[in-house]
Length: 195
Image (tube, rainbow, N blue to C red; front, side, top):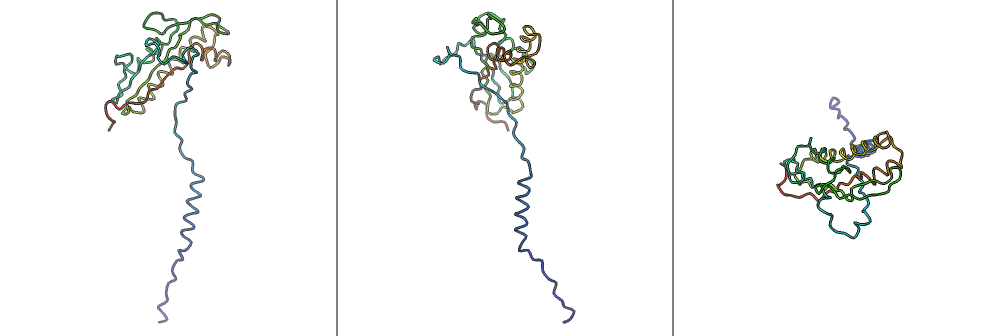
C-alpha cells in the first residue's frame, strides 16, 4: 500500500470568488460602445404661430420614406441625389410664387431689411420598415441643404463661410434667415416591417 498514494485534489472553494472579482474588473475597465445619433435642436415656435394649430400647406415641404427606402418629396418619387436640390429650392428666400413658402420682411442686425420665409418647415415621415441607412441619408441631405444655403448667404453678405462667422452673424443667419426647421412625424407602419 505504500505505492498507492492519493493525489491531492484542487481546492476549488475560492474559484467563485476569483471569477466574481474578474467579472467586476472587466466590467469596470471595459468601455461600452455609445450610440451615435443626430443632434437636432428644434427651432423656437414663432410668436405668431403659438396660437395657430395649422401651418399653411405651401409652407410645408413633405418628405416620406417608405419601407423599401423610396423617397417621395411633394407627392413625387425622387432619388436621394435629388433631395438636397429640392430642399434648397424650397428654403431659398429668393424664390417667389405660390409653390414656395410665404415671405415676410424682417429688420435684422447686420443685414438690415430682408425678405425671409415666414414659416418654412420640412415634414419628414418614415415607415417603420425604413432602413437606418436611408433614414440617415435623408437627414444628411436635408441638413446639407440648409447648411449650403447658410454658407451661400454668408459668403455673399459677410465674405466667409457660416462656420467662420461670428456668433452674432451665425445667430442672425441660422435662427432668422435659414433655421434648421425639420419636423419628424411619428413613423407609420404602412408597408410592414423589413425582414
